Image 1 (tube, rainbow, N blue to C red):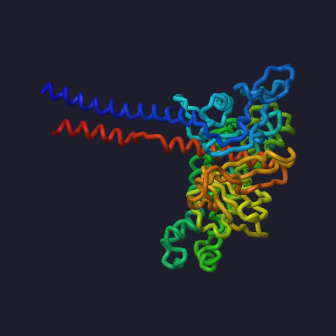
Image 2 (cartoon, rainbow, N blue to C red):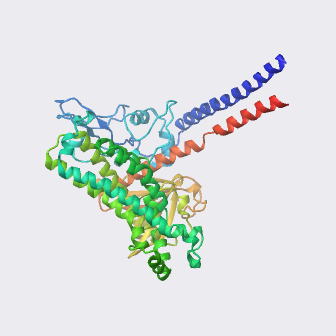
Image 3 (spheres, helix red, strand yellow):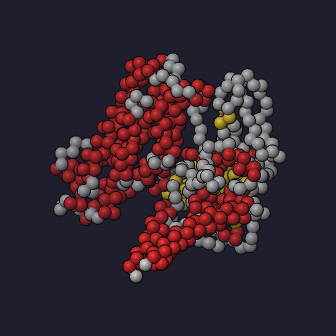
Length: 521
């Protein structure tokens, strides 16, 4: 009996040791994979300038200014000196790069210089084992604060007494309005879903509105928006009524985690919902009278966008009154400016997403497979294979780039390219002013025979596919900055997909099964 118990114990112990060994092997293989990627010789970046994110540099007061010139032979990050002890942002070097691609991100991410640059920037998060973890959202890769230098003061590092803020009647009124309108918003969404969220239970429902798919098309993801505000946003507002910095910081964290992307999804489905409502307008009006709903389904479904628009307006009023009152609580000002900037960015993306359903002949693409939508920008485009020039609007998604032609009030789909198949470059010739306004899109020819790459070619290497010309150099800089973030996200997701690991429930299940087998056999 004693021998059997020892045998039982040894078997179970051995099982867990094997599982532990698999996890250790997984980490080892991951390190090996990163090292092999770092030692690769083929780098698609022509100009090897570092693609640094803006970083915050803390300087001592009364320090003389020195030129902020990047040193390619040094791994240290050049600093921006300040005379007044302010926290300042460095200029991104992304606009000086002549090439950026997904494979170049793979190969350059593990070099020593990039490691030094990454260590000084907030966008990427390192785990204790040294790996770059999954980026939480698009915004965390490039954190820009409000342009007002007062929000970057050293005073932001220390807490302040917020009593002075609440002493201002106008500011208190704005905060009360923010919270009260949030309560009303949640209640209105609940009421709207109660009225129109269970139409399938009605016997007289038209055939065109029946079924879960039609219901989803009609209302979009309003239930997801309600869940976000009822479970997260409203509680944090009520919880932090007397701590405005905590309120603004927690609110901004939801934008960092991309929790407000549900509004982008809602906007992308708005056109289909409007068409469905128009087709069944008569029945919906009759149903509205039956349930005695004074506003109707149209007013209900317009509330999410109205609410998202209202947020930055309230925060702008708060900031304006903050300055007028002469309040000296800089940490709160910094937090509210940061939140207002995040909200404006989110609203811009939501407005741009409204154009996606208007793209003609986009049916061949499954938008759900393209990942999150990030940005839309207009360029003067030239397609080199066909020598055609036209006004183009480029839509950036997590997994691909979609090129459309602007035709008066509609958009015509032209090509789409997955990020692993393309490279973006600045022209090496021409005047500096014009070169800063141009982006060349190159396609790797060995991948061109695959479906969805836009054209066909043979051979190896790359060839020029598109030339995009912007009206201002700043547009190109922002666009390249956005593509850099997208490629960084794709690189992190790619690294996670290539990681072999066992789910914890599977590990526990196998261990329990083996233990039971040895107990009863």
